[in-house]
Length: 431
Image: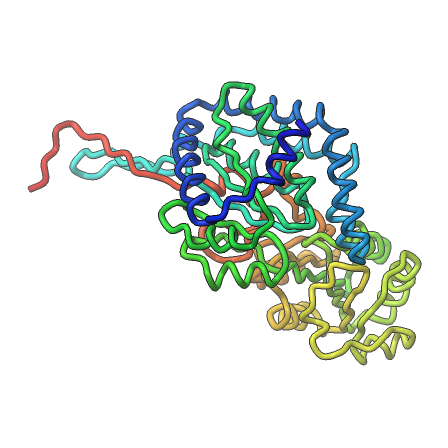
């Protein structure tokens, strides 16, 4: 195990494009083998990978400790440190996620639609794998296991490129995962990882038209923008998580207090964390002070508009650009808005189409809010941090898609399939 990790960290091919071509060719062959192996074989391989992750927990946590030490020495923030940190409990949760993916229904071979033409031809639309997926991610090392599980469940191969700050952790996770997967008789080349932190490999992935079928970037704004600007491969973008929670005038105060604290403070560094709190002006004097008190007691800091500061004068004033900032930290924007319409206007102006929530006992207001959103996920009386593949029942996720094509929201195995048509006739010829 340790030798495999060290090999992955020291291997330094000089030609990133050549390495990518060779890796993608092996992945292509492996993807075909995975797709035809059958649902039970894939599930068995994933269960074996999960068992291997558990078996190698000590090695994974030790590798992560080295990443954490380097991160601390560089002066990283507490929220990003939490994203990077692995504990035995988090490795166990990672393995559990892989097992949950293994137990999901087979996404391949599903009949998505079927119809018969007047000439008797029967046409069926059948789900099939995309092929080879390139995954570029930062900070969170568990993403490698999540992405591998989801890709393999859906009959795809994946090439992983993790961030430099998690390279030891990612290498240890990859070594453990593939040891279990390949030990079950499935091709190791179905899960590959870029062998160095050299950014040339990112460029090679982005240029790999015809070799990769899809690229999924999961990281900061800079990474996503680079991928979208340079990629010659289709991109399933995971953009910023500028999530909003709107507390409506008809909200239950006790519920609102509990949900807002969870939405912001449970894990401030995840993309589903609420970054902006919107309060209905009609009930702001009742709602805002106790919510601010709860958040402040847990270490939250604020960037508030003038109307909010009239009610809570101790809040720091919002600066230009604050409402367009994904803090990923214990900082919360606060603004007063005029009902559902005002909340939707604010979200349209500042949101990133990720996740928005409304807290209210008024069903009419809730429906108006949810129907008026253009975001991938809308929630009613629930924390935005539930926007997660595991919480949606996918076991894990490869990212949160915020675009408008192919997939939206948490991306699980079904979202990594495409389709083909199967046409059955009885000897028809076209006139």
